[in-house]
Length: 249
Ligand code: BT5
Image (cartoon, rainbow, N blue to C red):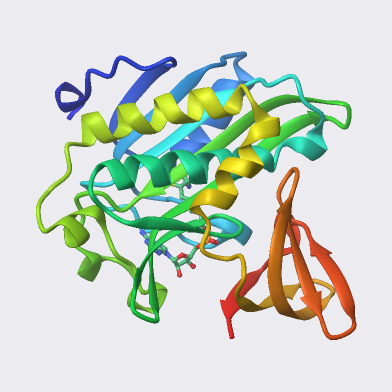
């Protein structure tokens, strides 16, 4: 409940026991002129992933959206997805869970060769090419939820399952928002921070894009968020928005 939170965050925080989607609510707040606002919910009944996929959001998760108005061109907005991934990874590690980032928008926990999805991030924005009007970064963390209540094909995990006991959602969310607040103000340094927490680099990957499949070694990330892949026929650079699926091969 809201009482469990009582966050001292660098944002104005709006809490809901249940809401269709915190991203949808944050977009509505943006249309009303709000900024530096976090929408937080215990449960979402219509959570969304990328490409209009469903995001399962039972009670006990940390489902939140950060609305802000950075002074950056539209093309730079993907850097805030990386910033969110770094922030949530750091908060998870402080909670004792060895999370790492899978490009472009997942945070997962490795168990041997298996990778289990802990977090998904969905960034939306509106504005002009030379300056965004607003950005909404949606972060879905399987916090105190049972992975058995999540879609099995996604191979999900949760902070609860990894730790064996519930996480203090207030502390976790507080740390997440503090880290995100620092990173969002320093986009140029986000890529370096991302490299330190990423699991994708140095791996053989297969990326599905609207233009076809790209296979090779993921060698680097470029500002504001593109993946650099060495293929047999040369270097390919894939923007986050063009990635439909990334699989290790
Ligand atoms: C994402 O999409 O990973 C972005 C998810 C963003 C969710 C947050 S919650 C707060 C805010 N409000 C919203 O409405 N959304 C944001 P994508 O990469 O497209 O992955 C979606 C896929 O993940 C689905 O097709 C499922 O296979 C799987 N999935 C669904 N729910 C999951 C969960 N809770 N944990 C792990 N995997 C899940």
